[in-house]
Amino acid sequence: MRHPNHILALTLALGAGAVLAQTAETIPASTPMGSGRWPAIMEPAPGLPTHTVYHPARLPDAKLPIVAFANGGCRNIGNRFRPFLTEIASHGYFAVAIGPIGPAESESVGAPAAAERDIAPAPGSPAAEHPELAGSKPEHEGGERPSPTYAAQLIQAIDWAVAENKRPASPYFGRLDPTRIAVMGQSCGGLQALDAAHDPRVRTLAVLNSGIFPATGRSWRMAAAHADKADLNTLHGTALYLTGDPKDVAFPQAEDDYARISHIPVYRAWRDNTPHTGTYRDKNGGAFGEVVVAWLDWQLKGDHKAAALFQGADCGLCKRADWHVQSKGF
Image (cartoon, rainbow, N blue to C red; front, side, top):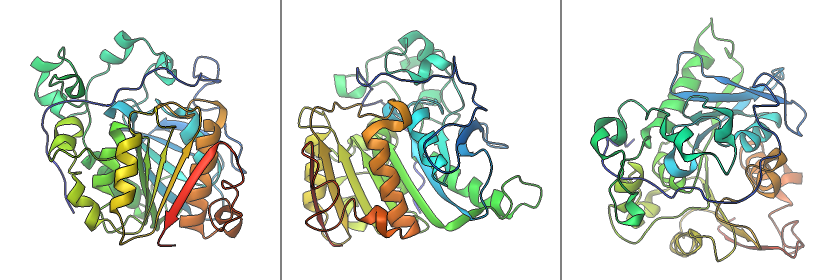
């Protein structure tokens, strides 16, 4: 298991995109949301102040698979993807996102930059260790702004959830399933997920609007993540690469990663007229929320109905004119 330390630079920052339909300004974190059978809430992770938890307000009898999530921009804001993560949790998942709950404005694509700059970086992150570079440009703009989070925080999320499942005094005691774990991340967070996916406990990976750059070491500088092209050869389990259309800045990286992976089952999907920011802040995560939930249901729950969205010449996504899909190894 590889736990990166820390180094310089940020990020594939999120730009304009889908409009958030519901925000914490109007809906408290404790209000159940999502279209699944178990509407879900958002709350601080008990005993893990560096993360935010999403889970059904009423825990079902069935044990919940665990999903660890890294934010776009590698940002240290646990509610940055609230509609998307709440939707996942409402279908019977226990999602743990990097970052504490930030201001409600952070849930909007057009979040004021000043509001996000005021959020402290994660302890032990490159930004926390190099505060003198906080005002510099991101690495992808030729600067060296350090990442406020790091890939090992996904492993911390998994470790914490597994421990909570074993702790008698935990509200999640015996309610989680450590044998069914997924990691995912959007944009810069996708690089962190690619690193964490090497943990042997992880069964599936979702790389959202992301992919590895050809230059060795760039993911380390941008995201404090070990994610070079050579690392694709040591992935295990299954992988989903999901992006917007060819104008998505991450499109070529995702295409190249998919072409290089040949030893595990991998699925590639992209959607017309969809930007780098996807649909994660649409109500219930929008079209991307639907696809990711179905992927998790297929890969972690063995749901044949969910699998039909992806499998076969007549698959659900195959019949939608705005989606383009390919797969191998299934």
